[in-house]
Length: 240
Image (tube, rainbow, N blue to C red; front, side, top):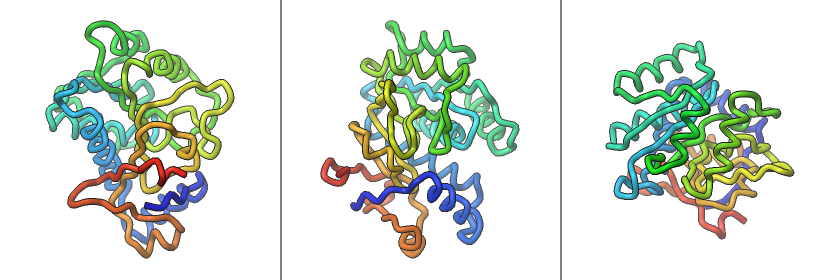
């Protein structure tokens, strides 16, 4: 699989065309993205390794991807909780949270509760970082700055899967000077962003809804999906 990267401007243009000439709705794209994230977590954190998963959801579409992933993982037998402090007023995101509540998935409402979930004998087994995607612009504001600090402190003891790009990273330059946040897993959606060049962990590409002609138009590749799988893991050679 080739590793051609999508800049922030190209990724935004791709999303725009997917919802125009390609006739996808935002709901559909979010559902497919969240399913990809859930499948990657299933691969790296199978139930027998521990079923407690915490989803950290930001206020935008990246957060919505995390909420979708939470629903799928809950239905697959995982024990989910989620932190969603800046709730969107958009109807599609309101519906996603309602679905979680209907499944009985508990919400964590404070940074202190997040800290408790990341440490101690009853800590979670895995975290999904769905706080901010490729459109993030610094600085990281409260309460997310505190959440990022907690992630940095716990990343050596609790594996983290980042959705599309690790939160706080620059989409083109990766972690800027002084940023020590390094999740264990990255799920690039549609195609990898330039920041993925700096990622050292397990890297998956997901979003199985692109035609070959569409990918060629925007100069990126469709990974070699197998069977009904929604993600493909990138090898060390392909990261170069």
